[in-house]
Image (cartoon, rainbow, N blue to C red):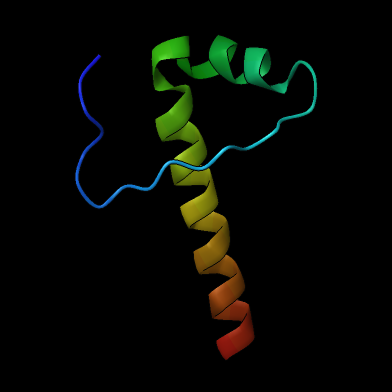
Amino acid sequence: MGRPPLGVKSTVVRLPQGLGERIDVLVGKQKRASFIREAVEKEVARLEKLRAG
């Protein structure tokens, strides 16, 4: 495991029991972090768009 890419800050996120495993089934364990990053980015963009609305 190497260093994280530049411009990325590590943040601990506590998921409800079983949610991590559900994500892993859908995208694979190695892609859990990128799935969560993309989901959060989409939701933030959606809320920003609503706020600007």
